[in-house]
Every structure is written in structure tokens, then in C-alpha cells.
Image (tube, rainbow, N blue to C red; front, side):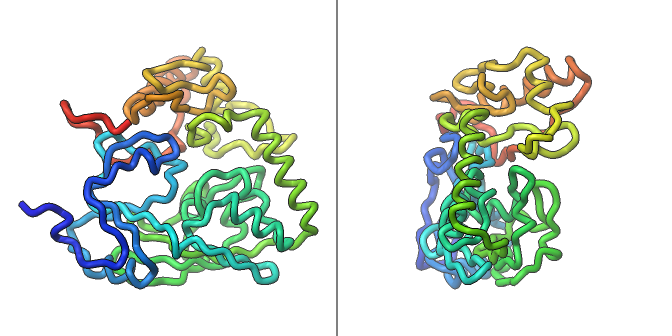
Amino acid sequence: MPELIDRLPQVRGRLTPNRPLAELSWLRVGGPAEVLFQPADLDDLSAFLAALPADVPVFPVGVCSNLIIRDGGISGVVIRLGRGFNGIAVDGDTVRVGAAALDAQVARRAAEAGVDLAFLRTIPGSIGGAVRMNAGCYGRYTADVVAEVTAVTRAGEVLTLTPDQLGFAYRSTRLPADTLIVEAVLRAPQRPCAEIEATMQEALDRREASQPVRDRSCGSTFRNPAGFSSTGRDDDVHDLKAWKLIDDAGLRGARLGGARISPKHSNFLINEGGASATDLEELGERVRETVLKNSGIELEWEIMRVGEPLKAGAPSGR
């Protein structure tokens, strides 16, 4: 049976078989992509998808800030956007931004032009992921600022989508998993630059005080039982928060291999060094089981887990 790389169309970008993904992952874990595709530009991406055999699965990734990539890796073609997809242009109250641009960078560039996208400053990841997952914090969400999105379907069709077509919901959209966001147009209120900078610094300070920002984590591991994350506002109540349920189950600081529940914030699952994806996922599942026994409440993962488990005898992707 021919290797997948031999069945793929020609590209101007880069195709890399068996590309390790751990070094591209926020958590530094995970097995390889069967093939990693880094397109040169939008035309390269569209043409590739249009010519790709229909039986080959596609999975887009960014900086993997909300993913545990399992140790067996990801089958098919993993697509990662880079140069050519990270531009940022501000015009009045509108910011046109490539999907590969980092959220924090977008917030800073917008602030310099007096556009208030301050909530993006503390969200790890890139704009493509922020749109797809409707990322948010402190009571503001990506859905609040999206005017339109350019995306490419699995068939290679380039679409311009409105917020209604995206179907924003809590930490989700209606976009198919194999549709790639390539650009977003964001529209936000205009404020004095100094005020936006102060808001961003306040958020950074608050995050530093309460979260393990210097550790490798993907942010909130589990949804709060009400189905959404904390707003971070002063009037935010702490009834039935995921971290409280984990604390009450005696799991703050719990370890498995190199994985640990953060002693600083118990809804953060961290790689202390040398963790495998299996360590992280299994520790998360142990937390869910223990919390269920202790409280009768079943926590739901907020972090996505993707790919295949490690096959017996195969080297780990840690």
C-alpha cells in the first residue's frame, strides 16, 4: 500500500511525512502527524484541498493551546498555517487578521491603534482557534467582535462567513472540523490607547496572581458544572466551580508521571516536565472519576483530546 505522502497533490508549500507534533504543541506532548502540510498561501491551500483524495482526513491545528495530542499522533493530513496567514491590518474600528496571528499580538496591535480587543491579550493561541472555539475571558468572547470570517472547506472552496453562519455558542461554532479558518475581520469599540493598555495590564496581573501562567497548561481543563468558564469579574460567584469540586475531592497537586494538577489553580492540568499525553489524559480522567464519586457531578473536558493512543511497543511522543 503506498505511503500517504505519495498520494498527495503537488504544493508550493511544505509537506512533511511523520512530522513530530510535540514541539508544536503548547503542552509539548503528542505523536506525529502522518503528514504535516504548511501551505504557502490561500491559493496553495485551496488547490491542495480540492485535489486531495476524498478518503484522506484533514485536521487543522494552530499553536495547539487547547489540545492534548495523543501519543499515537494524528492520521491523515494535519494543516498548520504560518507565514502568509499572520497579517494584522487596522482601519478605524476594524482589524483584519490572519488566522495564524497570535491573540496577544492582535490585542497589542489593536491597542496601539485605539481599538479595544484587550480581552484577547491573556488568551493563549491564535486567532483561527479563538474564532473556532469562541475563546473569551472576563465576560467578553470572540463572537462579540467577529464581523466576518474567510474559511476554506475540505473541498477547497473559499467562503466568506457571517457570525450567524458560524453559529457561535459556548466554546464552539458550527464549522466542520476539516474546514480551515484563514482570516477574520474583527470590529471593536475605540478607546484611548492608554486605557486599553491599562485594561490589558490589569488582566495580566490578575492572571499572574491566580493561574500557573509559567507552567505548561492549556488553561481551564474542565468546564464549570453550569457549562461555562468563570467570567473573572469581581461579582463572579464560586458556587459549583470545577476547581472547587477538584479541591473538595482532595486532588489539588495530584500527580501522574510528569502530569500534575496545579497547586496554584486546581482546574489547570500541567506538564511539569517529561509528561506524555497519556499521563495528562489519564490524570484528567482520574480527576473526573474521583469528583463524580465525591460529589455526584460529572466534569466535562474543556480541553480537546485528539489523535490516536500510543500503540504497544511504539516510542512515546513526549
